[in-house]
Image (cartoon, rainbow, N blue to C red; front, side):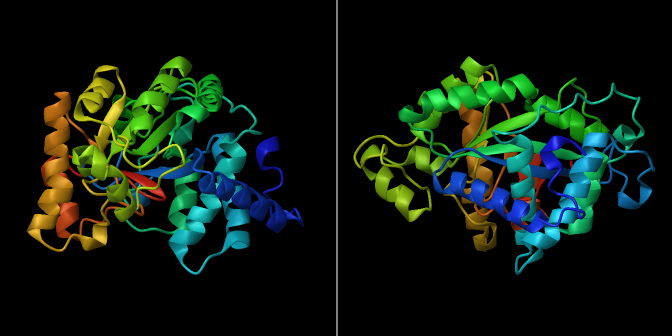
Length: 355
């Protein structure tokens, strides 16, 4: 096993301490509002995709060593981080492992084998809509997962740290855009010589435009910006209170009375500069609160319409507050497909939607 995950084996009598220490270190980043590394499954919600023929039809094959190591570390450490619910247990485990595998002390990843030389790279994506340890471990073993670093606030005082962090990621990982994600989801094969990593910036803060976008460009990476569109629409003098009322967290460098959200011109500019910019609902909404057609129009349909009008492109990704995954069972889920979204980002997976 690689040095990164040597402590995460069932043979290590101190695995519980190692797993808990990694989780606590990651939680400190959350509390500090810094970038938090995460592994998430990549799945398809449609069996019609080229790579998605169902878990039961997946051809056997030897996984890449790095993927097998990650899957084994997941299996060994999950029991040490058990939470009351299955999803929370998975979040804890993936978060702890990502802190080790992607965080500051990481070992640079080995490049994947050239396309076609490793049997596991031809496995189809899972179409399982459920959240389970077995499904997640299978995705990791098959190499069907994404490396994500989740950011929120990016005040000016953090810029030097952010540039250094992103440069480190650019050295070890390939930048990813929507076309790369689509190709991976369609084929089940990661096509670049280095593993991909997505720096994702949530909420649509002004400092994401002023600081994070520039930091991404200095580091040579594509930023992924998920914007609460109603935050952008809120008058400047009301943005502070709007943020507090909608669980959009602020830092001391976000004073009352100053503009805190991106403008629509800035959103359009991010798109022109080659970044991914896409809705995070309108008002930082929870999926479970979508009870009426008016709710769905406001939080699902209109944000994409506004985003597309501003950028001249097509916003293909979205995410709910609290990271709810797509099941296809709710009216809101069906509306996501009808509106033209292609990917839903959630706590433990990124799903390619039908269509």
